[in-house]
Image 1 (cartoon, rainbow, N blue to C red):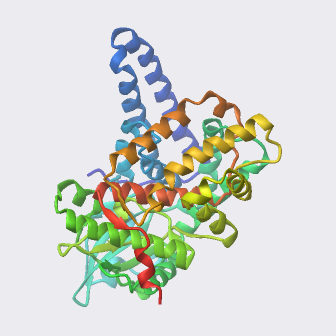
Image 2 (tube, helix red, strand yellow):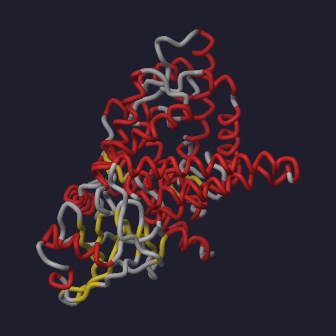
Image 3 (cartoon, helix red, strand yellow):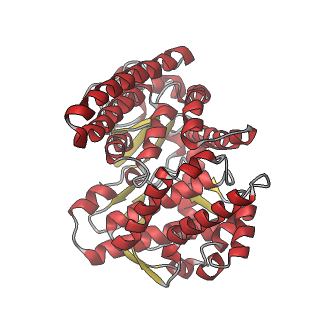
Length: 436
């Protein structure tokens, strides 16, 4: 695999990369106009594939927060064309790694020693390269270790990367007014936290201790003496990524057990800890040969304040959600309904979000839920189509909802998709068994 000896870190250099990508997209659109004439049935799909490739190729050379955006988008399976999901999913597992000399230089900078001086063995070729860092295999005192190294300049480029993304995102989601800044501040804050490996070490140790009572769930050990703000060392955990496992496994009993473990892990965090691992993509979960679930990468932890938690989960109750007066009151608390909404807009928003949340909270409406239920996924796909094609919605100010929705909804979208990959049937409130 081709390695990188340099990552653009300056604002001008990174901006020029994005401009180059924009020029390529313009060329793709010109080709699309011609393709519509000669091959109208396949023209749009071809445009999506070419755009997805060019956008991903531009982002992967930038790495950092720019590539993290692609990783986040790849989880939105029901909101993006499949060409984008397929291409952006590569950000979860496989991007060009840093070269060996640059890796050694990073160790020397932070530890004053080269990796071969700190470990008994250290593989200079990375085994996994993703958006913010890459992983190397090492050994020390008979233990296999995974050593995660952050790419240079990631933290310093987050603000400028988001500044470049803001105009596009604002147009896509019709964000208007000064309040839109709260959403970008939320993203920037979380991305900055993910670049602090000292914080990730602390969060990893905390969540491991808090969730140790959940059966069939494993965590690596972490090593503070071999970690710093840009390097994190933990046990090497043998297993395959959840999505890879789900493609080849037909043991439904095993799938249900894994799905229950995953569900309990998230519900325990949501309802008991009020703090959640907000990055549930397949690359962060491994399945062992014994069928155990291994959870890794706790750089993105979202705290859930009580003033958001209470109305959010009150609307997961089927009786509550169908009391429209109560519903309107709660979505006002959640900053979805605004004081400047016209009576027409107010009626439209109540009906739209009632329909959305009736679908989204459906797994909570019974004692059990089967995530292989294709009728449920059909309703989600139908809602996605409705949102994508709703002209009235495009006219409304899209600046709606508490900033906390960003990462909590991201968590649920990711969790639902993982549960669907497993086709798991679970007991909804099983997590309560582990409350001490």
